[in-house]
Structures are given as structure tokens and as C-alpha cells.
Image (tube, rainbow, N blue to C red):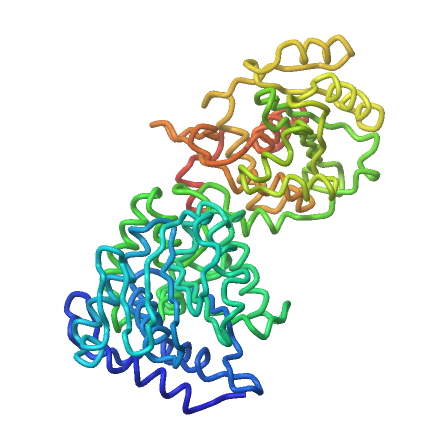
Length: 520
């Protein structure tokens, strides 16, 4: 149900405020169409009892679209204009400094509005604005979640949710804190992030599912401005799709200049995509375009691969880390695809700790059969050796490539069991050709990985290092999360291509040519 009077009341309140930044300072806050819709929808959509329908609003939008001004205006309305006696409105962010950005905008808005200025008492040392007629306040909170229990929340302004290091503060502020209020509002506003195992990604996914009709939550209001992974980020039409304030508060020429810089410097590309186009990207330097990798999620049937020749890649990493073993099956007549069978292990005792620490769903992957555990708190190499020997009964494993700096004893044991093991250097000379070939096969959709979630996660984690000659290699130090499976895949692919007399030349493609193929 829609209450036009309540919607109009909120809009008029905000229209009486003034902008606070740059050339816009002192200009009346006339809501842009996208802002007007959000305000009307949130404050005008009510239940049968007349109270607000939505208690959570999630707005994801690129920088410079005026999100801080909108958030500050909503904070002031919840404090002063919502008809709530003793309203407690809190500003939250990853740290107090970030949360203060919206608060400082609100302070400036109050200073420019005589009606509010004579009714609001600022306590700047506490980052608090007190609205005296209703004994309500708006206050900045720090990020220490354990101090926030017991709050009687009417409103929360959660700025840059993507920067939250964990979900503690979010859970404390949104789960039960507003139970004593008739219509609390949790207003979450953020740009896209980089961590797809964060609380922000979780909320983003929920919002996206609701927008697409996959989920239904009548209390949740989702707004996402950004481009899809499949959209052409170089197309200016998509810039307008992602930035509803473009040509209003954002100068198109400034976006063009940022784009030119991103094209000239690959290190800036992901920043442009994340901050200007609101795309969830992985790292500062992009290597594998995941929308292309996902196109290679062709079925991999282990039963149909029995008896076929294959090549293994073994990345033992450290005793407490993920161990990866990947089999690559070269093409056979009538089928031009390289089939991939990956296997992963972590120590059983560290599983729960790693889930909490890394914010990675290792426990779910284990339940689904995509990852295994070995007994104890370190990797049990003997268990893995036996596992590989069992695989040999089903698959004709011709060679196993391994990092020559890895666990020498295990490779000696495998050699003793009859396997052909090949030491594989991790420098440019050995890694560059198969790394480029993996990209080429992905572009041509000639690799089949079955959409394995652990392997896909690791592919998405890859950061590559480039030498002056244009050679590339995965960089474990720069890659923010685990890439063991990707490294094992690259090693196995190298052996498969070299030994099967592939028509592909591993040294054929340069980095520049690869980029041309990727981005046209």
C-alpha cells in the first residue's frame, strides 16, 4: 500500500535541505529522479497498520553519485521528521572516520537550515546531533560491535558496507536492535567491493535475487546501479546505466579521463570498474575474466573419463594450507576440449577456524564434496598419496608435475609407487607459456571445468606478474587469496600439451595479443 502524504512529507523535508560540497554548496537539495524514487518508495510504502513496509534498504551505487548527501538527509529525517519520540539514529561504517563522513555532511546541512539549527544541539566531541523537541539524536558509532548491544535503534545509516572486515557490527545493529520500535529503518549504502565472501556480498546477492525475482522479502528494499559482468565496460552507454547522477553531479569528461587512465594502466582498470561502474571485481590487476571462465562450465563426468590418458599437477603449498591435485585430460578425436578434474584438501582441525578467519565457505564445500579434509591440524600427505594411487586405478596418469620446492618426500614416494613425476619451475620460463595457453583455451571455450566452485574461486583470485619481455606467471604473494588449484591446473596443462603434441604453440601468444583478444 502506498501513502502519498508520507512519501511527500519525506521528500519535502529533504528538499528544504541544502547541498554541502563544492560548487553545489548552498544549492537546495532537489532530489534527482533516482533519489526521489528511493525516498518515496521507502517512506511512502506502508503496511495495513500504516507503518513502513520496508525496514531494510540496500542501495549500491558508484562513487560521486551523491550517496553521502542522500544518507545524511535520511539520517536527519529519521531523527527530526519521522514522528518518533526519543529516536536513536546511528551512523556506522568500517571505522569512525568513515562513519563521520555522512555525519559531517549532516552537520553542514543543519548549519544551512535555520529551522533545524535552532532545534538541534550539536555535541561535536561525541559526534552527536540532538533534536531537542523529541529528545532524539543521531550519533556516529565506532566499529567495535561488542559495545553495541542494548541499543534501541530507530535508524541505522550503514555507510560503505563493503569495507566491513566481518559481519559482527552488521549483525549487532540489524538483528533485534530495533524490535522495540514500530518502524525502524536500516539504510545500507555502499559501492561494490572486492570480497565475495563478505557480509556486503551476502547482502548484495540477496538484493540481486530480489530484483530478479528469485527471492521474496517484503521488508527489504533493493537498489543496485552498476554494470553486469558481461557488459562492455568501455561503452559510455553503460556508464550512464551505472551512474544515475551522470551529467548532473558527475561530469562526463571526468569519467572519460578516468577511463583513459584505466585503459593505459591495467592496474587502474579494476578500480575504474569498481568505483565508477560499481562492478564487483577481485583485485587491483585483473587476469581471468570470470564471465569467460564461467562459459567453460561444461559438464565433466568422471565416469566417462575412466581409462583415458591424463596429466596431473600437484601443488602441496604448506603443511597447514590447501593442497591441490588437478588432472587434465587432453582432447580425443571428436572432442576438442581439455577436461579438468580438481581435488583439494585442508586439515580437519583447522576447518572451522579457517571459515571464520578467511570468510570462505570451506565447510559448505566439504559438505558438497568439492573439498576433503585430512586428520589433524596439518595436511596428511600419506592420505593424499594413497588417494592419488587410487585415482591411478581409474585414470591413466601419464605424468605428475610438481613444484620443485615443494614436499620432496611425497614426490619421491609417488615415484616409488610407479608414477612419473616431473619437477616444474615456478619462474617465468616454465609458467608463462601454459598460463597464456590456459587463457587462450578459455577464450576459445576449449576447456571444461564443470563449474567446480573451489577451482573457480581460485581462478578468480589470480594476480599475475609480468616481466619486461611480456612473460607472465601467477603471483602467490600478490594474489589476495588461495590460487593453489590454479597453479596445479597450469602445471598439468603444460604437461598435457607438450606430451600430446598439441597443435598449439605454447610460446605463440604475447600479453598484448591476449589483451586484444579479451577486450577487442
